[in-house]
Length: 117
Image 1 (cartoon, rainbow, N blue to C red):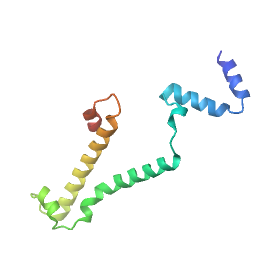
Image 2: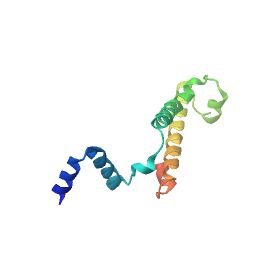
Image 3: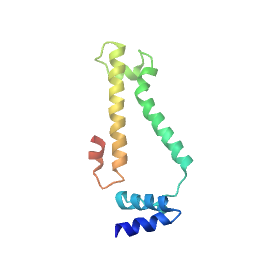
Image 4: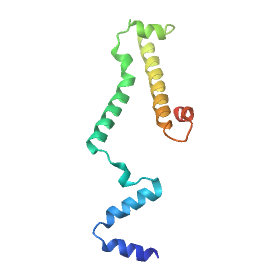
């Protein structure tokens, strides 16, 4: 019964680790033995991902107002502020689609659906 399993797990010194491992494997399909990897590497990759994600919307604000890159893609917008806002929105939308597309490519979900999600 559940009480016997609970009592058995409580008597073991590594009960918490076993319970967490069982919970992760049962509910999320994550096996602790298959993970491997390094916490430092995961932290570094996470930092780079968040930093680059935060930098993408700032790219138009770094370029000067008369930049041919901005005026070529947004020729109808009159003021520099409008051009930079439109460029920020465009880059953010494209970046979100690309991230969703790449993440969905490793799942059974359609990559295009993941991009638009």
